[in-house]
Image (cartoon, rainbow over the protein chains, first blue to last red):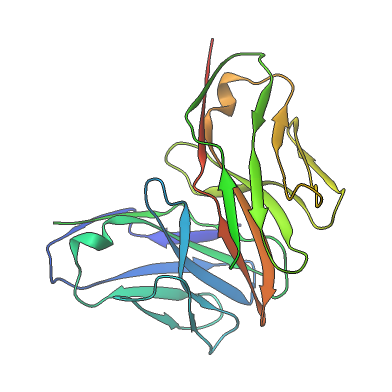
Length: 112
Length: 114
């Protein structure tokens, strides 16, 4: 049982490049989330998907898009990367109305 | 809006010392409260939780009590180990629609030395 998996683990981009961060969960959870973690700011919610087929903005959605491909997979896309998007990105999942979110190991992204 | 305030780190303790990491919150309604731990190079793991006032969450020797009167959820451990060195995040959850959204504190780094 892998839980929540994320790819890649590390990525370096140049300003203006695009990329997609992948996330998958094998716990049959309905809800999935993308967070970014920055020093001194804790985790901030970028986007979430309450259930398959729905997505909603979180606290810091600008510059990102998401796709809930199916119940297992939730991807995060940066269309034109900026240095301000240098961060560690975490995907998480939970049962609908569940208290516990389970986190993936994170992707460390650097934008030069 | 909701917010979580944690004590500034880093906290440096000797092994077997007593640990307290303070956490206070602001929320409407009746949130659930959580402590997550992040070990170096890893994602966050749920450490403990409490869903209503006066509940005590506990796990791996850590405890925290949901105090509504002081809006606090302080993390304690009687005797820390080197393996407890990590970043600890306090968080709250209020249900929003059909998804549960977490609000995190900024994290407190704990370093335990021999």
